[in-house]
Image 1 (cartoon, rainbow, N blue to C red):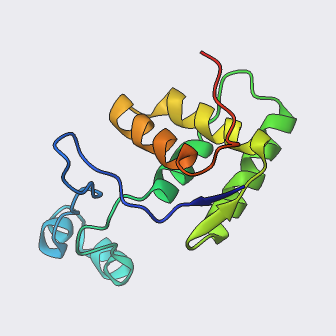
Image 2 (image 1 turned 45 degrees about the horizontal axis):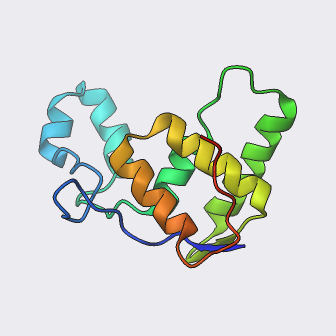
Length: 133
């Protein structure tokens, strides 16, 4: 089943949800010893806010280990991770992997994020398996 993963999530008041804005380069540099500044500055991350997408939430949560995960569960999550990482607009996952994604999201995300993710995963996809309560 295909899931659109490039949809931006919303905050509690309906505003677009973004990753927190990182510190400015100047703020960041002040925290580092001089010898490290020259090594790290070329690799400095984002200078502006980026939209928080369904894909981001799935990627973040799929790699968090559950207590009791065996090798099979870890390999399944890794396979899902690779598919999500390669996706730009949509990802095609079988029903069993959709359940794994939803379980990871429900375990590690607050209800605002979890609810939106589940709605986006289930919207328009009538054969998405419902999680057991």
